[in-house]
Length: 378
Image (tube, one colour):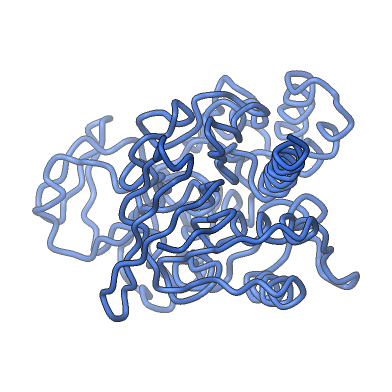
């Protein structure tokens, strides 16, 4: 059994940020990653034209800024280059292809006992760690909703994590399920590449200004009011196109539910022109015929589920000391979500995007440092 000071589970932005912050205190750690690369969600499960949805000043990892000539909204390739440079700068060396199978706190040892499997040769790795950091993020497992008759659909059904480009769907009839940023962007990409595109949709919003105002500690309700007024002035009344705004403003929506406001990339204009059809919630599916709750129905060749992800922490963390709920997300609201008991922490589960990741990682590293200092003093 390997005795370690800190074990970090996950080598995405959350895990890498935690490692960098710990290195500032010279605190030793081990970081394990189930995939064969860092930031595997970005490398393997994002579409080619993806950009960060929030301006770069809100998306920096701790202790390292983007290059001064980087665009405001960072493209996928530039973000991956930034992450590679980050790993090199902080000399972060994850143990790849290492999947955590169980983790439980051992009261006798006063340590977290972790069993992990080397996915290459099948061997079991045992760790005993004083501190455990859950850094697998909010987006661990693809989420596809249960829909009556989905199994009868003869065409292609994919999650947005498998979507790459509209080039693959020229001339096809495609339904995009989900109206977040991924759904909006995929629908746009499909339409401009010549697919007959429909989308189940809710609302586009402004967000960059809101992030800036929130940074100035202006109450979120007031910021949301400003954004809603500006969105109406910019987009007009979209209800006649099937787009109905939620009652909750975009920043409160993110804080309460984790759903991000939509950054419009041109999708709204294509909806107005009729190039993208807006449809309501799905009632059921019969073969290639999709029936919606308003009794309309259409035939499709492909369904793309831009329906987000869910956490997988509860599959391997056997006693979380009350830190997480049944969905593997923190029970306590931001900003009190990141710390559990017995040296357990989480990073990147606060529904605050990369800005939240950076804040979490700094808080966790500072707390671990203070705890170690207190132990040494005693």
